[in-house]
Length: 505
Image (cartoon, rainbow, N blue to C red; front, side):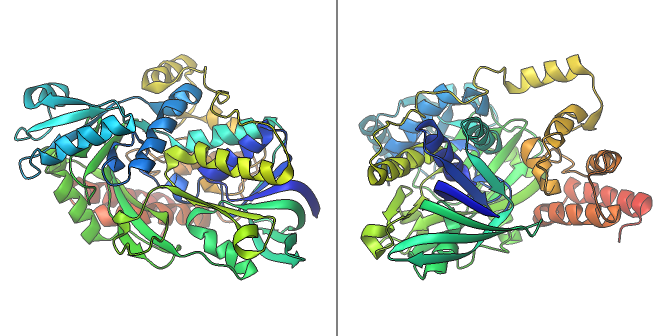
């Protein structure tokens, strides 16, 4: 199939989705390719943190200023995707208070609202914290739902004419006269082949930028840093909890919906595929976060996962944590003589909109288009819809529909609404659009119900046992590193259910 577009965006994470929306609102035709589903890369494997900028305010003040700027914008345009929990940077006896003074001064310079709290004030807000703490600094951190945010950008862009091809990977580039003339792509599940003729190409593939650039014999010096995280079966705090010290391993806890996410590590890796969380990393995260909340050792963990930070290598920076969390925008016309290719990478999830704005500004400059960015002013489609756990409970008990997932209160209607669009290519697509399978049982008690719906509607193909086994094996990867205590007992229960009921081996 031949396709023509003004701009081709490669990458369906937060940045790619943000670029597509920005282009659409400026009236520039766009097509977006994503080799998996939206948010299937690093954007769907982050910490769920709405950064205030505090985490980088001492070591990387420019990135901190970008974070607080976008923090305020997202609160206006995407309130349905986030929770304004607030955050605390806690000083423990081994941390001392010297860093707290530097931290407060840096926050003032970066424009981050920050206030000092004494020990009793902190424990009054968060009783589960270590009672030996010295004090804390309050900042406007929060939590964010990355899947909803990305899908809201996709939804808005689509209503403004953007075309999307998820589960479609680029296979080769055809260049001529210092420009990309044609791009060949192929459907990862359908096998359908595409010849795409773009005026401009944007590489927004994050840690995979060199995979794309290698097709035109280009390369960036990247430092790929694996960050591992753990999910608990309950919410451990009402606010984001950080250690008030230089960023290190196991020094942040983010409350997200009904769970908490513990993190994170920084492990240098050389490949972007087939990476896993190790038992050593799990032990490190538990031991370090236990210093802030002692009862963590009694908590049941339901999943471990990891994402890759696409850091652009800085000269003389051997420690990945020392590399800036700012983003890099590259015009390959100026750098490499390939005049219609742009790469955007690095940055934080919370700065995706700013990254998109700068990228589209560059495209507009190249095209001679004088339409200003409006993504910081126009709310995303669901901004006025009720949000939060209270609203979910109210809707759940009001509708009283067929339940597919008890843990996350997912009703069949939510799944039916997505399936009616005819866009499902993979079982994981449903998990990215609902919370099915993301609760305490990690799909153990709901996935077979989902398969029943798919077969009833004639959507599922092949042997049901094979489909079920493939899904459970993917979930197993995230549970295996945290199997001890109550977690291993639940795993044994699930194993007996699936061996006994479905004869899975």
